[in-house]
Image 1: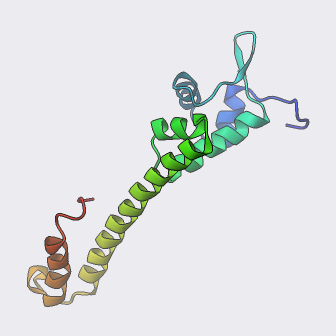
Image 2: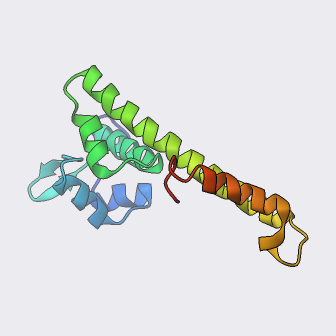
Length: 139
């Protein structure tokens, strides 16, 4: 886009972000996007490009489309911050679970025992999970 008033078609924006056009239509149907229209054709401007990038980044962070919509449509900073704090807590918990899974895999990779289930070090890592079973969900 060469000028600030230039727009892109749905196909152009989909290609730019590596998305299928039906994804953009779905995001529009769920209230995440609201592109301008030229007749019956969607036209995406610079603000739409930014919004698509925000949606993609938020999805990468693990936010659901509903949470992204809540965040983008929050009417007050305090409301948006509450949504983001909740998402941060969920993401932090997910990172902890993923790190525990990675630790278990790393431990198993380092094991030279014929029977992994008899390796004292591996069993110690598994025991940590058993003792903390009520505090975290499984992956």
